[in-house]
Structure formats: C-alpha cells, structure tokens
Image (cartoon, rainbow, N blue to C red; front, side, top):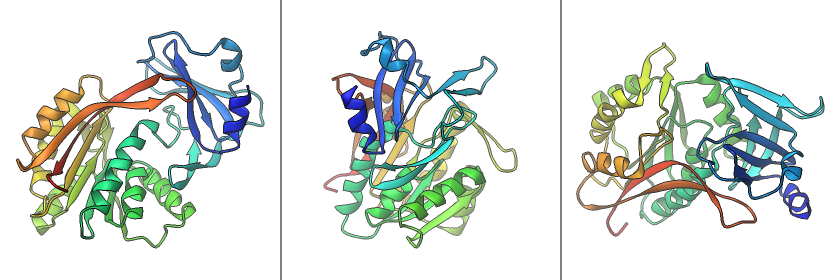
Length: 292
C-alpha cells in the first residue's frame, strides 16, 4: 500500500486502522496489532493490510499477555520520531510500547498554557510514564518535577530526554510512591503552578504501596489542592479506567479546582490516518485559569 510505504519514511507513530476489538499501528517501519476493547466496529481496511503485521500482542485472561513476531529479524526496541522528540519504543509484557497517541492533543494544550502564562511555570507531573508531558512542558519553557513509581520507567523517560537533546533541562526525576512524595511536599510547603496526572486503574509503589484509582484518587486530589500556588494555572487529569467518563472527571475536578477558571472535558481520541475515523481511548478533564 503506497500510503504505508510513505508513512514508514517518517519513522514515527500512526494509527492505521481499528476494528474487531483491535488496532493496527505503524511504529517506525513496523506494523503491529494490539487489543483495543473500544474498537467494536468493522475494520476500515481489508485483511490483506492487517496480515502485513510484524508483531502482535495477545492478552491473557489472567493479566498481561504475550508478544508474537513474524520472523527473528523484528527489532524488539527501536527509536522513532514522536511529537517534537526522539523516542524509544519497546514491546513490554503488558502490551505497552512507551507512548499513548491519545495524549498528543492534550500536549498541544499544555504547550499553549505554558507559553502564554507570562512567567516560568513549575509543573508537577504524576504517573509520568515515559515522559511525554514532562518533555513537552520542559520544551515549552517550564521547570518540571517528573514522578513515577517504577525506576525502569523513569530511566526510560530520562533516556528519551537524552535522545531528544534535553539532558540538561530543569527536570527533577523522582522514583517514589505518589502519596509518600506528595505528603512530603505538603509538609515542606512546596507549591506548583500546574499539575498533570494520568493515574492508572491499579498499581504498586516502589515499596509495594497499593494504588487503586477508586480508593485513592479523591484523597490524592485533596493533597494536590494544598500544593497549588497562588498563581496556579492549570490541572490536567486523564484516565483510561472504564468507569471514569469525561463527565465524571469534570464533576470530580469541580470539587478541587479554584472557581476562577475554565473547566473542559471530553474523550481522548487517536485519529486514524487516511480516514475520518478516530479511536476513543480514555477521558480527560482540564481546568485552566481564566484569561490565561
């Protein structure tokens, strides 16, 4: 297919198709297939394109899953161009690859908030994964505190920073349990001008601390309210947990954000290249100060 060959030259990420509870993605020069529970429709392209896949992930009922590869020459790691950055992609045991395309529209919003604030913002990024929001905010001119509970994931994010020529940017790289770190920041009287968080449904801290979104998100937001500076600019909350709809996240933020702001909410979507279709992939709600 001419389109695929053209896109491969970009060495980037594209959603090529979705349907049948799966998604077909182009990662650099490789086509991969992963589960996508919300893709309840028929695929846009025929099976001939899908059969060109070079890696595919099959989820286990007990959790996790297995990657399968077409031949021994498929690279398990590669470096691509992603957003403004150079990005390492890896096939992880849980089917993740180190990036989530649905976050890109939010990154453009984050950039706008930072560049129009009129001062150098200090931003807290929680559950920060491989660093897309961190590097986006830093590139736009902010100081960033990047926190994730997994050392390997923070190392991955730092490697992305190095690959992208951002090794010396003012970024604090923190490996810690979110509550352990936040409570310490509150005691120190620390403040931030913006907060970004993308909490998982379930997780463990470095000392086996338990995170369950339904039990802990409200308490976390209560602590985060204490970290908001007098000139607090924005809060971006996103979720991939099924029961957390855009409206649910919006109602939640109303309890914790200042009144003098704008509250927006919607589904997160990945546009499908070459068609008008988009793949819903979670929800977001975001608060920003008026006239920001």
